[in-house]
Image (cartoon, helix red, strand yellow):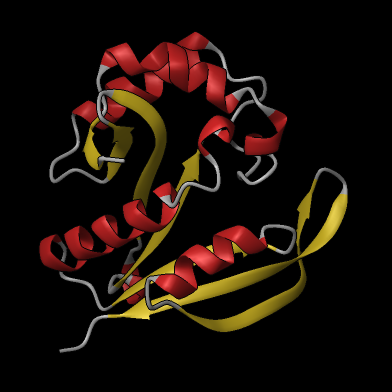
Length: 167
């Protein structure tokens, strides 16, 4: 397994649309991401990401194969020392350590590239595998927003995981 993070390319659009149209993957996304996810949605996302410098969203690849994605959202105003981390791995590649490796690579990149103090990741209650990925990478559970989100018509707990930079 040779997991790397690289800039998105337009050639990633077709597999991205296919992976995002899987309900198992989409169930862990925020609702602003369309479902089903069209080829046009993927092309628009990639075209936007290609223009952003420094890079904030990467394709996760194993060799040359797209297996997932990882990115950050920069926060503003009083939260400007925080970024929000999000990541996903396509279903055929689950349980292979890919997310753990990608989160480690991204954490190093973020702390070395951006002037921030905290990386924050939110995980829905039914995704303990993602919580284990964060814990393995030195994140700690900061809080749980009890019944704090509404996804697919269900009120769910939202687990907030944090990793702080040591100054």
